[in-house]
Length: 279
Length: 273
Image 1 (cartoon, each protein chain N blue to C red):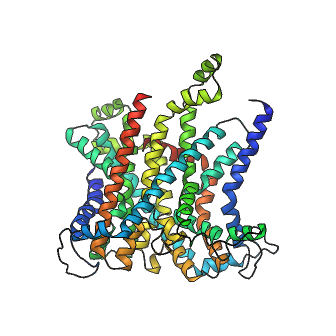
Image 2: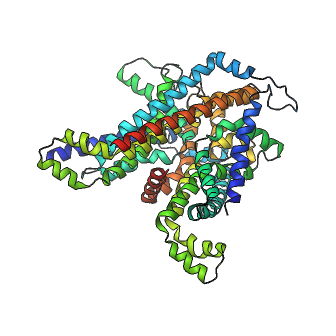
Image 3: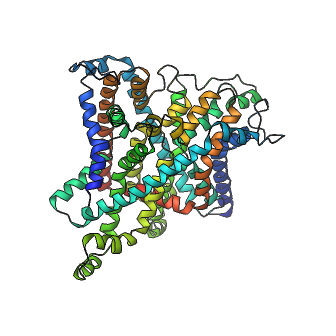
């Protein structure tokens, strides 16, 4: 009964994946019928290509920093919105709304905010009497804008997972600790935080994988520019293949990307699972 | 908590909501203003102009793009449910050594991002002559989403469907397929709802497959149509804003009406994923 599923996955994921390994040892240009085997030279090239290190660094920033911010804000929002206060449901819906919007279109929505010409940010700066800024054209700033947009878009997922985690913690623990005279901070440190461990694991692994794969929002927000400044491994691969007809090398970058994502998600999973057991 | 501190927290929560709403507010004011309106993006239009929506709808060919996106999402979603639940059933129920390996294999695939195999996948699709067909977008999306679907279905079957049901049907002489479609599948409704919501959001919003495999205008989905509309109208952002607003509208309306299902479905999907 699982044969159709197996066939689809083998044909569209596994086979291309191993075929990619093969192509990474060639100089294929992406459209010719012929190519040469070039051994490890694409790999040598990859390790000496300054762009490799730039895009790996960017990819790690996108993956790790988005994860950090999504978890900090997700947890804060969840703690706040778990209280019996007004506007609670309204804010949950608003914070969650971007999750269901295409990340590609989300990039345009934020482009309208940050654009040098006719962006909302510059209208605000002008109104306040500051200089206009070209935030998206600044290679040091735009990486962080991408982190911001990705965090903004998916903080709702972290929030909901933390809310579910908070609601599964028995009220009795809090009542008991209150009798013992525990402060709010002590309650958080000794009850809430350890019992949220499974939610933390899920959020971190989910966000790392999502962040390292980042593609859509970069294309629509900065186009990877200026130059290669805000490219991730995904967009670099796309550029190599479709703009530079460098398919063999693009496949090599794909192998590196798969290795990095595999390693990081495994490391995160192992560390966090061990912490969970201790807690 | 005292009433006063509750009120302060309510104010803080409302402030958070306002911050999060800013991009949408800008999007709305922009789409309601003409291109020659140089007022601040933050100012609500003094004269509301609906023309942008009409022009954007026509010039960006949003109608056909909606149709393509809907066809791909509905067909891929339906097949995903069928193929995924069929696969999950034996993996959850008959835990032979082979089946355990197959299950682990499906789970392991989840870590491979589809994009890492872009080059060979593209090559394969071109050689099959399937570039610029909705079929390839459907197949790619199913394959990409199958591991999570199988994971969700088999988790649900293991934890909530009692074995006695199938044993009773087996004694009555039903076949495995008969048992699956008549007894098991109807009981999978809650997890099917989760799969539908997760996969619909993912496939409807897909850009990375669509931009590679659907480059011809006749098969453009919403995201690809938006991409080409933006490049030809960078000097008329108001028009692009109107198109973006139209493009996100169906999913947003669906979400606002069914938000409880969306939020629960997604939480369930990711907690188990």
